Length: 431
Image 1 (cartoon, rainbow, N blue to C red):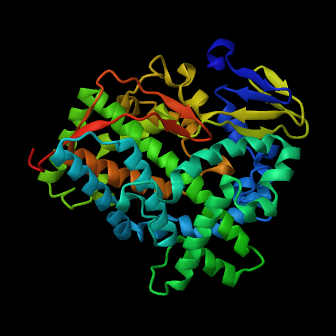
Image 2 (cartoon, rainbow, N blue to C red):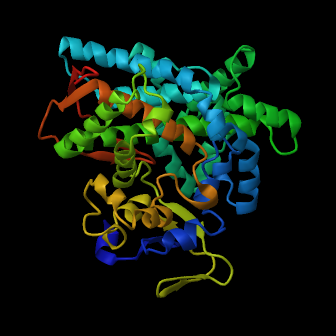
Image 3 (tube, rainbow, N blue to C red):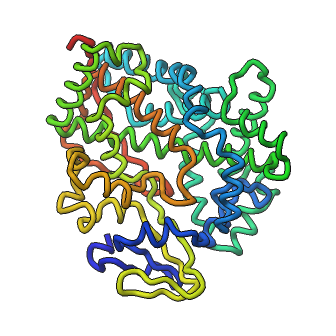
């Protein structure tokens, strides 16, 4: 990476500097700075639809986020746990079939299927059918990947106005945002008709709309739903893939994870078909492995731009004038040897047991971003990661088809690992 050669500051555009200084998180992400113009350029599906993510003014963004926050609380998300289990059980069914036949499995792809369906469970009380059918229904995943290319248009205002922000383009469904939008709209419409559904995320938003129409409108809800699908699925799927891939690549780590789960089983925990979130939280080593997966392979590849305020901003020995775009990249921060030590580029869960682990986590651990732009769905991600990964590690031995496979990723807006097919063997809970 450029920051390895050029240290703390790398100019990546005529008006933008990538900042890898240890103070970057505190002085840029945690400060109430305006977001860069790129955010305003990715209104989804067009300029009429405003989600908190695209609002560049901190105060306005915070106000809109508050109006949607009730749907993302841990209590609200936990209400989805039972329905989430059905998606996970579908995933386990496919894994059982591959274990029985001995055929290799694209586990990476099925983890993406389950991540997409779990979002449907949590937000709309409806799966999208990917895990049930074992295929990319409606090209949902392919569309999300295409959308990662489309966000680059956010930097080009002229083309953005013509294509990304144009309601006609949305109506014609020419670009991938239209397809994602229609998927979300259909799910919301069906959710509204389902009077027996639980009080899910969308229900919280509609309750707020009814009580405070001055704070929220229907298109805010529709846009936020679209963003939740397009941004949430692959980030969590990548974290799950990273955990499994590097755990099975490190036999010592794998043995400790399985030993911890075995001890939990002896104590009456983790013995349901799908492990409960409460039980998974009682596995400290597995939890730090999840944390290390999020650190080692940050699920978002793009930098997070902010604008230097009036009077400029000083970081380290540099001062940047007003209007300079300063961006922070999660990969740069998470793999910095200056911050994490000489083993920063190694997968090492034990780092989270060091004396300075709590301080490092507070200052530099940003898988869900930081400050007023922190990911609102982090509780959904934590619930999903804990349940899915604990259950899989308890129930299966996993071996790569190609033992010499080298981890490779494609950096879209989110990070997508290359295929890494595996063989599965069913484990007995008494193993």
